[in-house]
Length: 153
Ligand SMILES: [Zn+2]
Image (cartoon, rainbow, N blue to C red; front, side, top):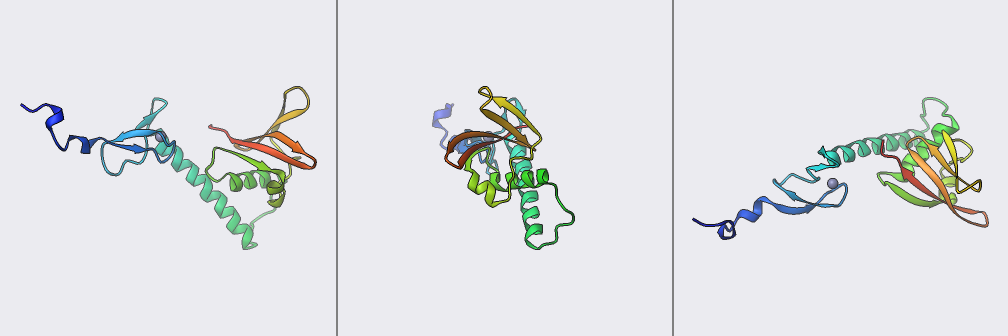
C-alpha cells in the first residue's frame, strides 16, 4: 500500500488560497472557492458579508447615479445625505481615516447624526451616523481628521 506522501496528486485537492473577503488563508477543496468555508463558527460567513457589502455599495452607486442625472425623487434630509456620503466614501472598506476636506467636498455636515457619545472626557465625541461611527482623531488648524469605522451589525 502507498501512504499519502506517495500519492502524487493528493495536494491538488487542498490548494491554499487567500480569502477574497478577510485575506486569511484557507484550504480550497474545489476550484470555485473564493472565501473561507467558515468564520466565527458561521458557515460561509465571509461569502455572505462580501455579498451584503456589495449590495450596499450598489445602492450607494445608484444614489450617486440619480444625483448626477438630477432625477432625485425627493428632497433628502441632511442626515440621509450624511449617510449617503459615508457609503460613498467608505465603499466596501471597514475603516478609513479621512480629512474634513473630503467630507466637505461631498456635502457632509457633522451637525447631523443619529447619536453622539462623549469619549476621553468632554473634548471628543464618537458620532454615529447610520452604519458608521466617526471619531475626531487629529486637528491641525482648521483641518480635522476623522477615523470612520463601519459597524458590523
Ligand atoms: Zn474569510
